[in-house]
Length: 417
Image (cartoon, rainbow, N blue to C red; front, side, top):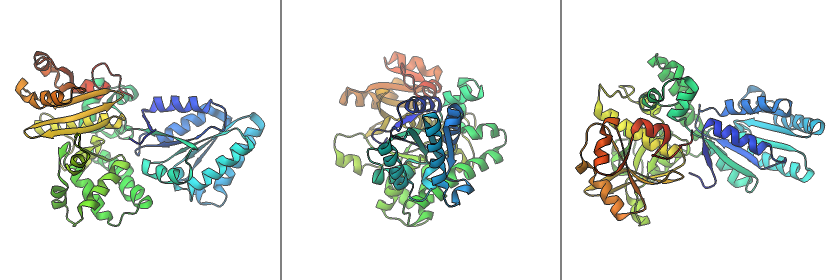
């Protein structure tokens, strides 16, 4: 997670932005980024409704934005409102699509500060890559960054009225995009939505338009291989061998980083005291929303009854993605013959996590015991089926059902929605 970045659920993000907009204006520019189709536009429209006549909403992806003077008209209207009512808020949706958006925002903000005009600015964009690229160059010291993250199972349950356990199961089998929820009964329609509204814009427009990508076909292939390897440790050499087009290891590593910036795939590093070993170790590939696994897999969503092993891999992927999306630092650990699925550090605490679906014995937790022996600061945790909780209890290890982990994180931790 980028330093200084808040990664929040919808309601927490809305609450924080409302608090900041209540501060004296002009405050720092609020830059809101996040994955596609998680509610950024809805959030800005919600803010506009709450601000009422003080708000000016402008979308840079609207056809009207292509007309001369679009930017100037939005801020001129805000200045009129501020002059009449004391304060205004400009809400710029998909701001990165406006030409020289960061440079123009810098000029506007500097003028507002210099003239003490009480106007707040909130700007949104579809990925951290979009906003960070311009903000680092032009807006240093003038902005605060927030990320509206992938939805959690708990947020699905609250928004759509399903039971928490059903929401957790759906998070594994079909992911957590709220816009796709109403299409779950129609697989073809659901798949088309995820492909056309989320995956294709993220790879085909967001990354290609705003970051030099010399080989877009190779970028797509890297994503396809990652999405077919949920929660698997895959060496770059092995990944390279699965690609139709040849690419250097440096290019493949770079493209994995771009996919992380676009909130699609997280290449987890190995936990190690030595930086050189961390960099040399193969990444563990975690797709950040299981909907992307389901739409890329010819078999569709993973169902436990049909394929328990595949379902187990998807549960592990969903759990590690949940931690990553909640802003935790997530790595893995492997020292032959030992291995631990995930190592989590952050606001949740420090945890060594083993994900087990199906039956297991105490002997299957040897890697967990060895890691916490070498790194005592980590607390061992087994994420498993509810029926297997007594096995962990006999081993005197903290345990939580995987459904509960997806709903609230580790024991005693209220995970952000």
